[in-house]
Image (cartoon, rainbow, N blue to C red; front, top):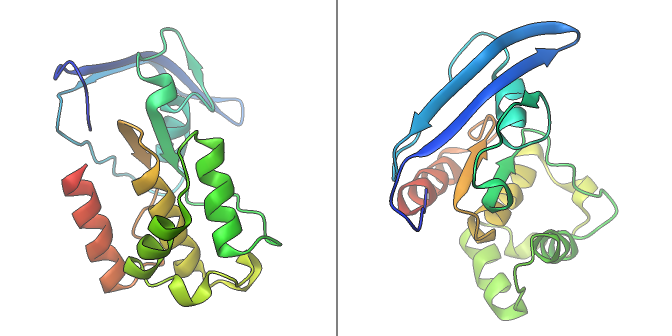
Length: 171
């Protein structure tokens, strides 16, 4: 996590609810600069609800954390438009994030993630793993200081998993 002040990031307190059920009444924690936190738990335990609350997409934050706009939420369901091509989705996603999209640089990044040959393919034709690679690329290019990542390795092969791990270390 890049943090211009090199200080810890404080989160919470959060009131987390899902389906009318209270998951946590007053959840707070502090994450030191340059570190990561892995949330583990059984299916249905509230991991995605927690990440969505931290990203400002769910739950009820009593005190929002200071990085709001510099947060990237990597969802296990990226919400891509199925009719767009890979390049069009990449360009659109970066535009929505306010990140300049230079076509030559994007071509190189697509190649590095094994998506270059698919740049003109519609999103609907991608495998789940290819879609995750595209989401990973968008996250890497997002210029966001805080990454909230939900199930990042699901559907990724060993090469893409290694790319993810490298990206996380660099970030």
